[in-house]
Amino acid sequence: MSDVAVQISMFERLGGAVTIDRLVEAFYRRMDTLEQARDIRAMHASDLSATKNVLKRYLCEWTGGPKLYSVEKGHPRLRQRHMGFKIGNAERDAWLVCMRGALEETVDDEAARREIDEALTKLADWMRNQADNPHDSGQARP
Ligand code: HEM
Image 1: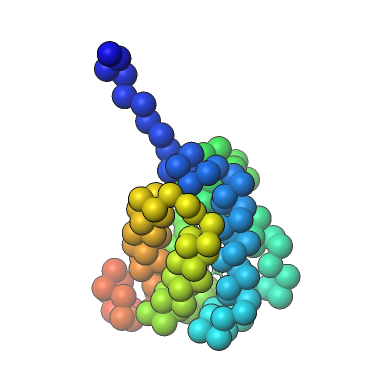
Image 2: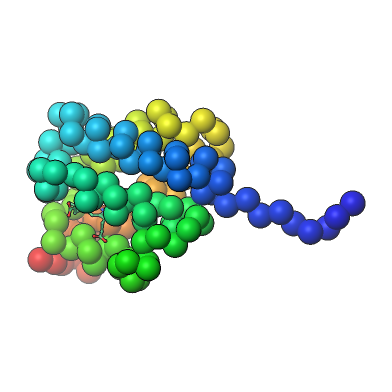
């Protein structure tokens, strides 16, 4: 018996780039149509193609797949990149509704889906930049 541990990345467990492609399409389809997501949809450009492309690249890299995001954009500094948008509890929750629905639709492996959901929930929570975010010292930033 081999004692070499086989590491399978979240990227592979999800189903690779094909699943990430479908996930991001399903996510923005929800953002485009759900009433709850109307305010966060309005923060985005009317044509979502460029944004979809960046999120696909980001999620490939973040899940342990090819580093498609940082070669183009450098360090993600994701929280800083979101500072220009007002993200409080309602915006976080709307984002997560779209993402959870998209995960349900596109990721078959239940354990992988649960783990990525947990990780994205933490990330979305961290993205809040209003005064009610305990990560900030009570100061909303511009
Ligand atoms: C919590 C609520 C969130 C809101 C309201 C939000 C909103 C936005 C908006 C308005 C943009 C700009 C899109 C554009 O220029 O068309 C953006 C960019 C982006 N968001 Fe979010 N976002 C949220 C959370 C997240 C999370 C949790 C992730 C991580 C998976 C994420 C990943 C990204 C990426 C990768 C970009 C592109 C950044 C770049 O240009 O390099 N966002 N987001």
